[in-house]
Image 1 (cartoon, one colour):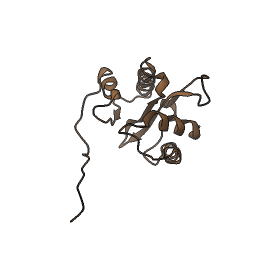
Image 2: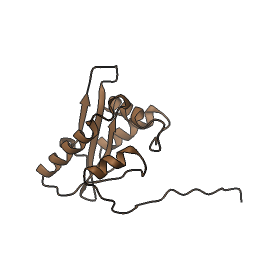
Image 3: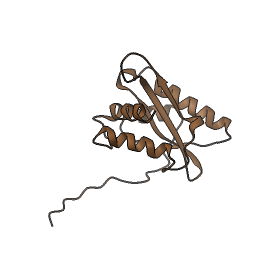
Image 4: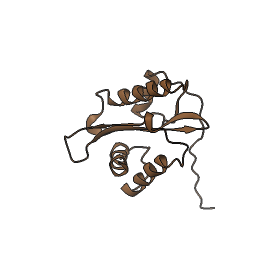
Length: 143
């Protein structure tokens, strides 16, 4: 469900360096773009949600995968704040990698912001840095 996944992403990234959208509509639009294949062909059989009934949001975590240059990419692995540090992110990542392997893929890529807790998770799961693909730069424009 686009609305629920968008809400989860907003909650998971709120206040952090990966909070890309100022409002819920932006997160829902990004989920829609992923599902519509605008970042590359979506891989539904390798994308999962973890549900719960503890509050009105009903999603504890989600992971979405798509192809980027014919290589599977994890676009978002998100875990709701109240479900962190119990292994849910690791479970979703391993489930996705297992399914990708069953489909014949031998590699998966992802992008992660250095210094956030997820970086340590990916390192534990065997991901290695393939090098920076971009840098963030800033310049004052009062010329």
